[in-house]
Image (cartoon, rainbow, N blue to C red; front, side, top):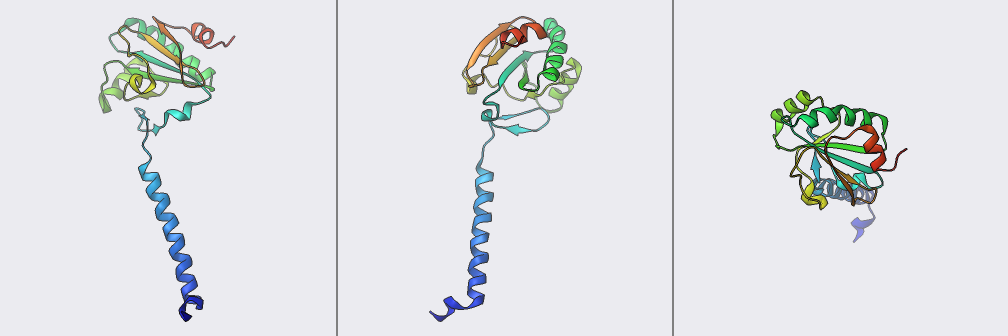
Length: 160
């Protein structure tokens, strides 16, 4: 067992251990599954929102009240960086069709590519517009039906 004490052996083992750690890190990262994807391609986990109020607004291009409330959500999201504002296109188009409708509606806040209702334990809308509010613990706090304003959104989460 003389080779265990040679400098070459020690360097090889040190490099091998480093290689194992790098490989393990890559494999663990590759296995991480995202919970959602945004229209811009960004992916993430619902746990990223823990500790924050989350507003999930359902809209569609054919919904006239939705057209009225989108500017309110745009302004609210810009004024309240500590609140997560997300959109969901009720009709669920994907890719370029989704991006076209986001532009058509003037949506300036992130839009989810899939309906998160089942994963977050609430019912998908049967009427539009609808906004689901999750509290900082990730539980449904309220469901708002009809067009919202900055004032009604702030009131719903206790902002004065």
